Image (tube, rainbow over all chains, first blue to last red; front, side):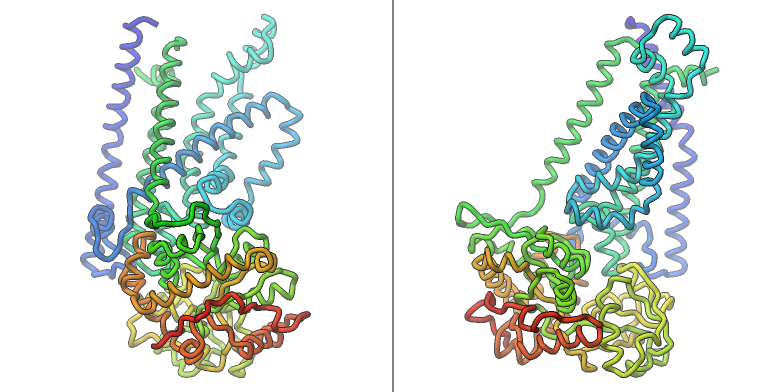
Length: 274
Length: 350
């Protein structure tokens, strides 16, 4: 790839980022409008903060130091971000590897996949306390919980992608004496990328659910911990502050995955262009 | 895509995650630590399991940590948040933690089922079980609960002990309709009138009063109506009693010293707790002040905080056996060991 090509790629990427921002401008307005409406409702009906705090109250808890409580937001935010990030990386990596192994061996798939369906059907809220009893507190426990919540879409999507290859193409490379490994590396995995990414996008939001559930049940730090602690004492504003932050984290992770998708699969955008 | 671009992208990703790890690793050190005082070089590690998420009555442990008292005694105490008394007993019985807080009847019933756990000191000298209701519901005495809807989490100590209390006040335990709720939803269940009665500790009163005007909130503390069981206590494993008696003695000495300090300086204690946990100090101070009522007894005045009264412990075991249908295959003296309590005791002159 020469310099011209690289700069063309970069330009395309920049254009894509610009377009996405423009496209999402409306959603940003919708979100802002929602917050304004919420603020107005609280103000007009004089709703007490323990039932529904105004977004401005939630934000003021977040942004300004308070005399009556020290929430140490940066400490809790960074532990939640770490938990989400590690959970997402671990879940997606392990999920993709499992899927490749299952696609590689039909036999293994027949044995293991039903078990995964079984595991995926377990209500996480019921088994999380037991996981806690086995493993104790910590980021690792949160990761295990997030993995159980999020690995299934990654595995299923990746397997579908690995198997959805045109038979003609496979016949052709078989005719050219391609090894199984070559078929995987050159055909199946590139072909599966769009499927993997849609799995990862689902996984990105599931990791957040998993990590927060983990913090609810098994943690002494993080936004989930702030929520559960505040719930007990009917201290609602920090709950909403945390919820706003968690949603932001979700949107951010989703955007990162989309960006990665755009970088690794530039052709999808090229196809979409007129 | 050429190999070089791919390489650049992967290096970028690796770098990003590396930084994330570094950043995250840094946050662990941000956790507040007790000021390092002159302490013995090798500290004995003690895992201490709380009964629940942070409440005002957990302040003493952080007072002791902040002031370095555990370290002075050579203990490195690690406070672990809890999931209820039943969970504490499991954790202690499986030796995942050394000492824990549990409602007294829970280790007693579990001991009858084979758990090797013992009570080594009392926290609340009065039982804090309580029922809350709207005054407008027409409830004027505990017996009026018959036929009402009661919201309580399935594993809650209140629900476990309800049959005993019901028989004491002379009502049929099955005469109420239980609704299962999430522990954190107790206040909202009553505030929204989704239940007529909510079982919640008396210590939760300040939180109830946030949602329900105090002049409309009715409550009965069970101990005012003859429920004389022991409540929150420190428990440990039989093996720990055999192998680490000195550690238990040191732990209780510092812990009751911290209780003594907390009862005398509640506001400072909550300030310290606020350094470790995201709490609203005003609410938690109100919570702690309610808790202090459970220490204002003649037993604690004469014998010191934490004192285990043999007669009352027998009564507690008897209550568990009689009303909760537990077969006691051991004498009541087996459920506790009072030999680790501090001497001289910290008497509470309220």
